Length: 484
Image (cartoon, rainbow, N blue to C red; front, side, top):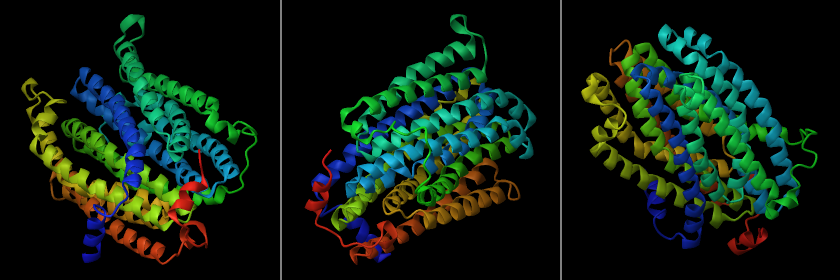
């Protein structure tokens, strides 16, 4: 614990302002992009609520089941971010182009594969004994999202490329532009406005397909026409798959996918479990989980920025860049978590009121959502650490052990403990959330301990796990290695 305290204190002092600025410059547009993406999701939730509280809950079950498979696919493909960042640190343009082309083929394969279970969401939910009315209402929406899933995974390929090149501002603008497209599509297709067919929840899924195709088109045009990226010749030979290096891609990406399944999937599966408890619990949980998703944007942005800067330092074998970037990201994450605890804890009732009106016969749902959100507030300091520290470790290509930690803590302690509390001990929905809180706390402690060990190895000059043997270089030489 003393070592952990010293590491946390060191994150607040002795850090070059330039490196702090680079972390913030990369993370800020990513945070805004995540918030814009969440705005799309919240728009869907709010407009589903216009169909009634039960439609809100039923749509949330289908949406969250889709998200489990999407986040797994996106995380596997996101192995490109640390790989491209390290290639930039080493000055290898040929390697960057190879990784990016490989990303497209992998995204197409895994995106199509993950769409299959989403298409059959009604069968999966039936096996989980979710209430039949929840399954029947959400099935048309799930089939639309199955079509959208490969499109959004291809979006991630361009996103990884731009993040690794520290060019994240465009991601915010493109995601922001998709909000009105998605909202207008919902308004037309869910409710039959402007002469469109009234499709209900399925209309929300079709609107998501349109928004995804819009983002994919704009990002493709941006990257392929930008002079700075023409040197990679990304379209050259794209239609001929080359599997050289695929094993390394999967070695990094598959653990990232299962880590995401442990992290995000556990929270999303909790929505399915709420469907077993009842429709009221699902509606309350949907509101609390959407707020948690908004809060998730800041640590997620910091995590991605940490992966880029740490990966760049590792590629250049710069001890200073790699460790300073790590400490900055971790320090900012802990500060963010404490701020969330104070603000959400103080205003949880007001926040729930944005989603659920207690005066409209929904007092029980409102009370449940308020309780769930209080648990979310307590979770935040640990959750921010549990999100950002893996981003740091990914910069070192350290993904396998964190994956095991995430699976054990989120699924073993979180989901397993939550099931015991919810059903045998009759704690209901609050038991699910207490289980998730417990798993997050244990995971954060394990990840911090892992980072301390990694930090000690890099200080000794041991780069073998991250990039093979090699001596560290001065920070000035590292920054001069690549000029883009």
